[in-house]
Image (cartoon, rainbow, N blue to C red; front, side, top):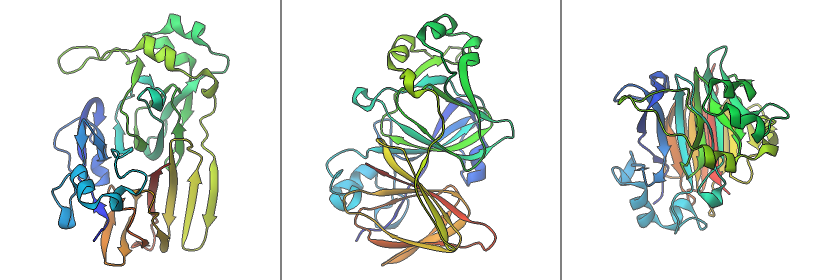
Amino acid sequence: MVYPLKLRPIYKQYLWGGENLCALGKHLPFSHIGESWELSEHPQAVSIIDNGSLQGKTLTEAKTLWQEKLLGHYYAAAPCPLLAKFLDAEKQLSIQVHPQPKEGGKGEVWYIVAAKPDAKIIYGVKEGITASHMIPLLNTPQLVDICHMVPVTPGEVYYIPPGVIHSLGAGIVAAEIQQRSDITYRLYDFNRKDASGNYRPLHIKKALATIDWEQNQSPKTPVLWQQETSAYTQRIYDTRPSLYFSTLTIHSTLTQTTQKERFTTLLCAAGEGSLHWQKGSIPLMRGDTLLLPAYLGEYTLENKEADTDLVLLAAAPI
């Protein structure tokens, strides 16, 4: 019998990371944690299930046992197409770009969980900037000057299509849901060195070939559909063609049904609550991630706190 799978976080150490994921209930095993991989069947790391009859098994093993009932008809025979993370940008990330999916790249969505008052992201470049303007500034601090700096606040959503120059700024904790690839081309890394005293590699030639100059102007991610009631607010964002992405702000309860074609991933960004389905229930705490099997059927999300909303990020592959 299928049930919602709670997944163990996989911690990744980066020189730009910190300890801010503790506020999401994470028990960090070492310092400079930049990422907590929440859902992954990537070759670098595969998620382990942390509840129920499949506890201790990998996501890959669960697929073998449940087959299409887990990821759905479309993805039963393929690797899990999404990678979900929480990110702690204690320091600025590199200025980077991702290639198109057909080249092993990805689109990704950022949800701003927390941000210092002056926090900014880089999203694209300033109007009129082309490769001829950028090339003389590559691997110099002046590259930042031609980038589009966007102030951010908690609760905002940013879709980063392939080909868009971007960087998560210092002082931001974000949830990131992306296509499965982890390919990144760095344009500038602020001349930082790793623990061994080495500079991280740049990928100038590949990055320049990847940049989509026509998509580097607007950071706004429009809402395709919204429903607001006294019990909840749901917003579905325009993150095509990468994935379905929505935010669920639950004041009391929300009932939905999974589709047999695909699975759903839920990341808890704020609040405390529970998920109920036909055969049981599971608590939801800030920082938790659940994989809802395609064959789960009807489920209800319930907020447990009268004065605080339960905020969930829901994603599914297209």
